[in-house]
Picture 1: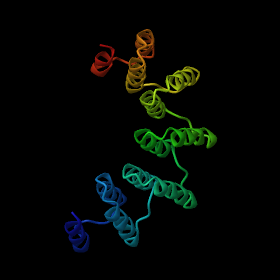
Picture 2: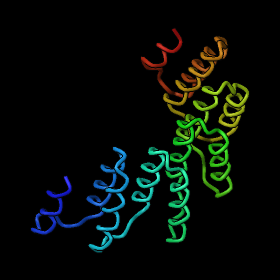
Picture 3: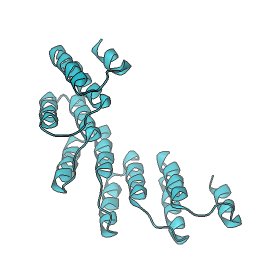
Picture 4: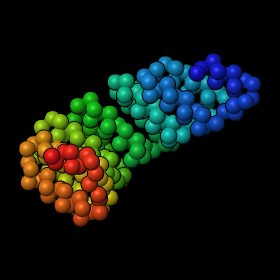
Length: 200
């Protein structure tokens, strides 16, 4: 991919564009090729392209996926210095990374930062939290998340309800599973194959 891309740029067949920038570093970062990702991050800037919030989110996700958590934090600090404030998408990426790593403490820390920075958690945020608490047997924290959701105006989706139903299924709480199924329909979220497979 690298040589052909260089040839296309040099020949003028491919004009440097932010979409190309993000696609290339995302391609390398997505398969764990961090060195190549960083090389092209620098190369595209030399061509006159400036990173955007999506670019930084790609860098954060890629480093997190590769277990480079400290580097992930450095990128968040660097983007702030470049006057890019982390968005809810940025925080959702970081929370998802720590959820998959089983690092509840860091995940909770990021969740608190969302509120501290005046951002609004969404269905994706809460799904990651519920999934993490369920995996670590913290059913009390799952209850707490559901209370927060009920008392907020967050728009829930089928994926969130599936995650919550699965959490109570893992805890053996069939009654709560059925309550959530009813609440799901009341919110206008249609159960899907995953919902029914989880309940069965």
